Image (tube, rainbow, N blue to C red; front, side, top):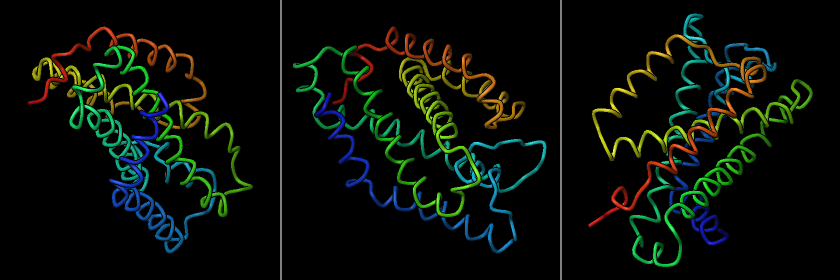
Length: 218
């Protein structure tokens, strides 16, 4: 477990540091743009910057862009870290550890690295929003959302490897749902138990679906 976390840390913050730097730069750049356009430094702006305020019907450009940007980066990190061990040493990994055990450790490792990624993001932002938000509550809901997105992206990837048509259909359904639903701190707070059940369901599904054929690399 310790080896997996450290290896993922090196892969994300050292090997792919240019993407991590770009992620932070873009968010702080959007903060600067918000300042230029006289956005108020309130909790709503904070939610938008971290991607937790999405309502397509309102037509808020910053809200939509930052939601898509944050979500895309989280999905990218999740898939990238998932495949890293497989592409560079799958033979050795599965000689020492069972596949189901590895995927459990891997999901926890990805979550730990994503949490660290967000902590580094939060600290400078607190200079602007330190007295505007309930940081512990927001961070907890943020991690809940990140974990859901992480598990969902891994689930879709596994389906994609097994059956591209099913994965494409599932992706279209998710896109339609995305156009219909809103994402906000209040919604996450009111429906956290449903999200937890979804996470549990996805974890069980990933564990059931995964097999050695999924990770066969030549």
